[in-house]
Length: 68
Image (cartoon, rainbow, N blue to C red; front, side):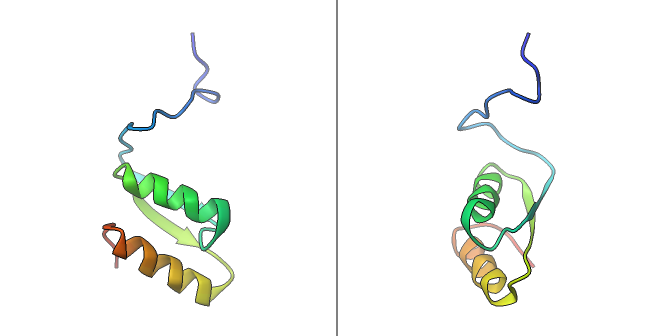
C-alpha cells in the first residue's frame, strides 16, 4: 500500500483543482507552478518580489496557461 504523502507524481497525471504556490516567481516555486499548470490545475502564485511575480505570470500565460 502506498502512503499518499510519499507517492511519486506521475509525469502525465492530470491535476484537477487549484494549486497555491508561494515563492512562485522563481526557482522551485516557478517550476512547481509550471508543472501544476501543465497538468491542468488552476494555479495561484504569490511572491514578495512584485516585478519577478509579474514576469512569472507573463511566462505562464505565454506557455498556454489561462490567467487573469
